[in-house]
Image (cartoon, rainbow, N blue to C red):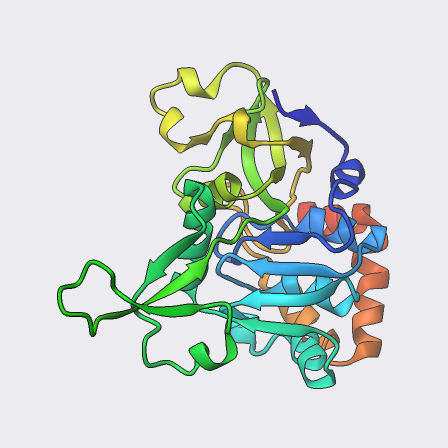
Amino acid sequence: MSEALSLDRLAGRVADGAMLALPPDYSFVPMAAVRALVRRGVRALHLLTAPQAGIAADLLIGAGCVATVETAAVSLGELGNAPRFSAAVEGGDVAIQESTCPAIHAALQAAEKGVPFMPLRGLIGSDLLRVRPDWQVIDNPLAEGGGDPIVLLPALRPDVALFHAPFADEHGNVWLGARRELVTMAHAAKESLVTVEEVRPGDLLADETLAAGTLPALYITALAEAPQGAWPLGLSGRYETDRAHLAEYARLAASEEGFVAYCAEHVADESTGAAAACAAE
């Protein structure tokens, strides 16, 4: 069974310098846990977005928690560039390992399968091969006559996969529904830390309807209950994205002073965010 922790103790499981995998904004993003990491003052993270990210990554970067970002993209979507990410890149405050969505998925799948690399063809001809010396181009050993290049991607095995979910059961099994990228993250990572809206009695794996969308407790290191834990992002079937709040974040985070003010109001005290989320409902 997964270990049950408080939110702050869960965040305490992420060590300085860890490779931390976060899901994209369209998935189950652990915003409450991200704010807890900022409050804790975690440092020198290798942030792996699986495969892209938004406000969660921007918040960690702006707070000085990140040394390296491995990503296909970091942005606020229709609200434009992720401001603290952009400032950190321009200022040389973070190292960037550029990637693509298929490359990140494939490298995580390699770790999931316990193999040292995964082949991928779509990178051939791109400039990314110039800036990723760890990606190796070889001739397909199974092709007759040669002349068939393919890229080998080293397996990505995060120290921690961190995500949110609607609910878990009393045995520590977590329901993810159709969010298969989270399953891949959990399979690939050394540890998986999960926040959930609620813990329910019973056994999700014994329910034929829910079992197919359930990640077994075998892959979960620890759980913490965090109602409204994805806010200001939405959680499918639970609550909608707080678009007004995201717009306010984009406005404030455009400057360092505004970002500090945002954190003072919405990060320093987690109850502030929870209260705002409940009011939005």
